[in-house]
Amino acid sequence: MVRAGIWGVGKAIPEKVLTNADLEKMVDTSHEWIIERTGIVERRIASPEQSSSDLASAAALDALRAAEVDVGELDMIIVATATPDMVFPATACLVQAEIGAKNAAAFDLLAGCTGFIYALDLAVRAVETGAYKRVLVIGADVLSKITNWRDRTTCVLFGDGAGACVVAPVKRGGVISTYLGADGSGGDKLSVPAGGSRLPLSAEVLEQGLHYIHMVGKEVFKFAVRIMGEASLEALQRAGLQPEDVDLLIPHQANIRIIDAAAKRLDLSPEKVFVNVDRYGNTGAASIPIAVHEALAQGGLLPGKRVVLVGFGAGLTYGACVLEWNSREDRLL
Image 1 (cartoon, helix red, strand yellow):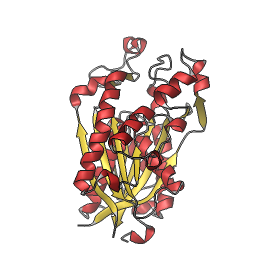
Image 2 (cartoon, rainbow, N blue to C red):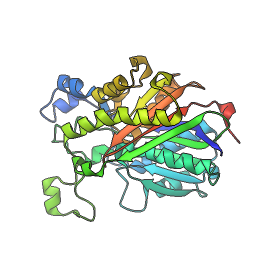
Image 3 (cartoon, one colour):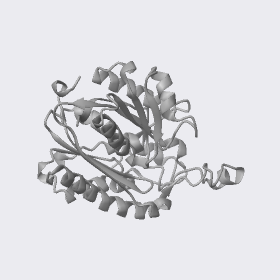
Image 4 (cartoon, rainbow, N blue to C red):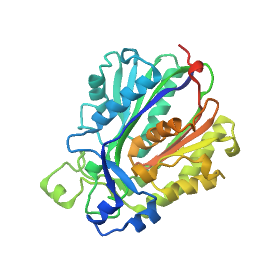
């Protein structure tokens, strides 16, 4: 069976920066409170004209350049997003048209902030079968547009962005194992209640703010603290590895306390945990690929390094991936 690895990664983030000081002027909160509870200092906010497909397309082109793959070689595009441009067509189809990937199948995947891990799993399995050779995986969200900026419990958490990677065959290294899961009984703990077939948009819905993110923070926090460590350990077991074999943990960037809990469960020192939540906040499905891009740029992803990607999200979903970072020479052309 062919092995699948990451050939190149890319990212796209909006220009506008929203700081904790800015939020102090908008809602009853403080920089100190936000830092203590979340570790977030600032986040990026899309312009009124920017959509998920805009950021996704920019990240896609960045990843294709890094992978040295022509857009015409793409066989499939998967966009993980909770904020599609519209109900249909799929955001992936909009990206396909924007970047000119005429030969690629395209579809969206919704698994909340775990979406990138879910999409990466599908891409890896598609490449391993030999049916697809170049798969573009994108995580993109503009959560600011479904955030209630009068709700101090949620508006401090979220930001916008996109990250992408090209998954293709490799001789060595690449993805060793993945683990996906969900607990649908917790679906009401993190949701956007309105806008679907159960509760279509109406004047009453808009007045009640049901088209915004609603979160039972304590319940989601307890779930995340438990599941991030458990999912990582399960993925490592499937890979035949132990926590001490991990060179770098790249977790979903939702909350520094959740990240610290996952690191503690794996007994990893701070230098083995990548963190950028302070600069971006929670960017949903974009969180992990943005972090991968930055870890690579900072020299933390050298060939042979064993990396764990792990996330949780609305659903409630969770997932982890163990991979050995591959070199350019490991690519199977």
